[in-house]
Amino acid sequence: MTICNISERGMMLRAGRVPVRGAIIEIRAGTTLVIGEVRWSAAGRCGVRSQEPIDVEALLTGGQPKCQTDGPRLIERPAQVRTVDPRAALERSRVLGRLIDHGLTVALVLIGVGVLTMLVSDVLSMPFQRLAAGMAGRA
View 1 (tube, rainbow, N blue to C red):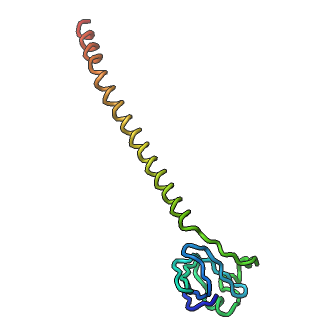
View 2 (view 1 turned 90 degrees about the horizontal axis):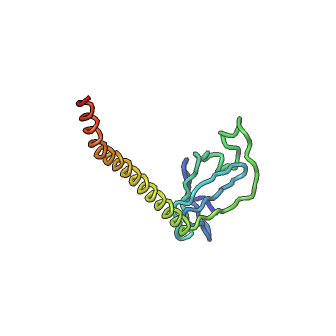
View 3 (view 1 turned 45 degrees about the horizontal axis):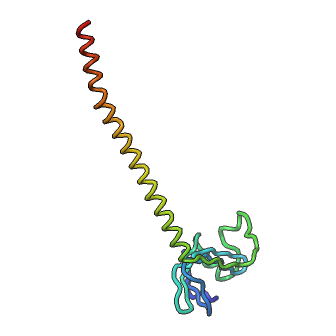
């Protein structure tokens, strides 16, 4: 892949075959690693939004990123393209939406049952209160 332009929060890449929108990718240059999500993909190009701010100078020169000088070093591992199936993501969203919908429905039903229970209790307790008041007045 070729980096066409780069900023602190993302970059545009060009290649013969680019990852699909939603894929999480790793871009390496020397010891510098950028992890980001493909936000758009079209005609051999794609836009990537990085998870962390990019040290542009370190990425372009392949040197150590400035934030890594005092902290832990990067661990070398082979680059992988992790693709996210848009249909699977859509189905997960639908399932989550249904769970939230059913959860809210159950909560509203329980609140309604509680309110109804209090109303019925008040209505049924009135005759007993009158009876108790009447018996107290006779004593």
